[in-house]
Image (tube, rainbow, N blue to C red; front, side, top):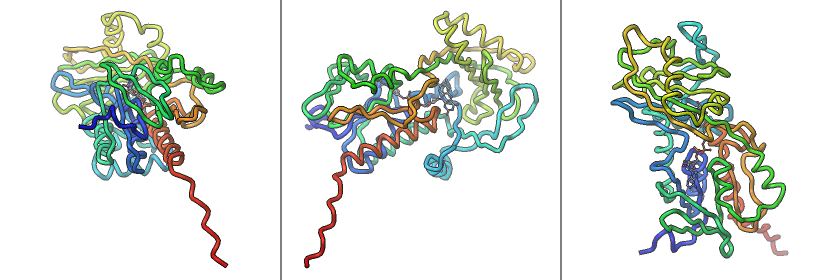
Length: 350
Ligand SMILES: Cc1cc2nc3c(=O)[nH]c(=O)nc-3n(C[C@H](O)[C@H](O)[C@H](O)COP(=O)(O)OP(=O)(O)OC[C@H]3O[C@@H](n4cnc5c(N)ncnc54)[C@H](O)[C@@H]3O)c2cc1C
């Protein structure tokens, strides 16, 4: 039996988050042999949804917006199949019982944000892409005219091109002694992320968050509080997601769960319905939640002979949309590189 180890793939993508999956679909539909590897138990990365106490909660990305036509076309397709829906047109800061809409839709995903990643993984598989979860890549080394990927548990993969979509410090850690030309290394080392502390609280008795079930206070210690039941993804239980802002998260990142939980509980207290109680709370830490210093382009291609491309939400633009557009740009770049330039049409015989 031929396994993925024996075959030299066209492309191996590290990371089955949104950017890796979008790149995989673009490359797979262009007929290239692609493997996507992710250290997680399932696909999605920061598009993360967790089952909690009979309910469900998004604990990474909460919603997304559309600013660019290319991403808009994908979103329209997802909307038409009922995968995504506009959750809101603005957020309350908590000072009013309802939100005044700003006309700008914020989309959520049916059943939780992770379902978008699952949908894309199915689409990628249908275009011939192989997906391997539970596979942490530990090193990337040049081999022949391409790359070798070493993974935990002794797995090795070979490919003509490497695409790295993990948060950049994690991608750089794979390169070990590999020489990256300047200024490429400097560009990559300049990229920065802020962390996020997050709590998922199961509430018995309900919460009274303003319409449409969320409060956003940019810059505040606890910047986001959202009721996943009102959002529509947790019919069986009231599960509230709370996110701390970047500054507070950095300052408290290594504190014990109980201390962090206490701060989140205090922020939730004003929104508990009369007699309601928090019956379960979980703390989640995202070390690389959101880029704060980005690379200005949607990808960075190293000047190595064999293609080595970096992408993700720190390239071009942040957030869900930025990750998706970076993924598509990674795919475009490799399709162009692997498609032989068209020969000029011969002049007609005299
Ligand atoms: C708390 C939080 C709230 C957010 N809220 C929003 C929001 O409301 N709206 C919005 O638009 N965006 C939001 N975001 C940002 C959004 O989630 C990201 O921009 C987007 O999901 C990033 O996708 P990505 O593919 O670039 O990276 P990721 O999703 O991080 O994917 C990278 C993948 O690489 C894998 N990986 C890493 N190292 C290795 C390795 N060595 N081997 C194998 N696999 C590896 C990881 O497991 C991961 O799956 C939020 C993020 C967080 C954390």
